[in-house]
Length: 442
Image 1 (cartoon, rainbow, N blue to C red):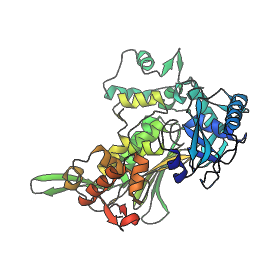
Image 2 (image 1 turned 135 degrees about the vertical axis):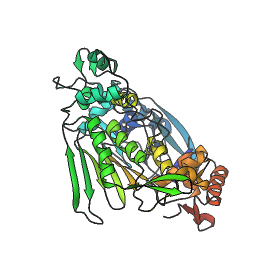
Image 3 (image 1 turned 90 degrees about the vertical axis):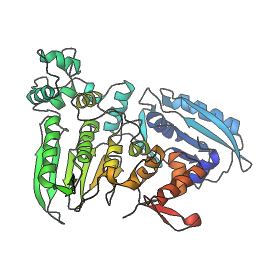
């Protein structure tokens, strides 16, 4: 855990707030932290991060405790730490992410938006309620019980999961609960009545915004959406074979497996409570897969980009896609996408906003060596992979970025960067405190 001095140096963030003195408005931020992620409020610190101190820290501590019990429902877990910084006394209020969401402050639930605290909208409140009940969207009963499953049955048969009693199989997969179809069943059904569960596929003409091809998939099983998106790749992105001596290699403008992973993740992990459709856009230099809704509760942007943690937003859909062999259950999607681009001139990007997750897959018009034939990218350690994954969201990094974002020491961070630079996986620019690192070809 970062020390108070480190927090002051890094400044306010989504996880940290400074307060010169106690105010009841602090309770909104307590609500936001309890609802979404651990956070800290430093009282006795001005907006610039300079300690101003508290004259009566004991009295302020009591005010904070009373305000939490008077304004928060239910009570979140927290503790208060007294810290002496620059001969000034400050209080650090540590708020833990709770399990009984939503945590209301005077009847409203709050969320952090960068360094601000704002009320949760209706869709976010629904997510918090479901999380507090330990339920996911797809576990709820479907409003429409008149469903058919021809497409799903075909896929189950191909995967060797056919059953003489189809309803028994649907119950095993939790598509039927208590004699009622779940929303997961609705998403997988032929008519798919879930209004928000659509997909738009668009291919643009070369270097223009003119549409060459467009498909709108509404009221289609998400399995059919997956298959149609794969066919769209084959239709608009080139694949060829090269023969070098006795070896035959396949080259793709956009690696099909990377594209497949991104499409599957969008369908499995998107927020179906949010209005909007999954968008797949094929441009002259990249493919964009846009999934409505931000990250599932409990996973940070860093954890997502490192591909080290998977929290399924739609648990039943996740399980069905796993049984059909369309995804893996080991949080490997992001890492597999990054690995498939090793040896190519540009790397994928993963953009996270409050309303969408976008995966950008560069489109290469010239053949690239396959990943296992790129000597300098072999045998990467997990920490080296973590360092390279930081470039999914930035153009350059410094040693301090590696220290802060990966939680590594100064010496270890410097050694990792030097090793990657020596193998030409990174390029060093500048020296001294101005030293920074970029990926080759950027």
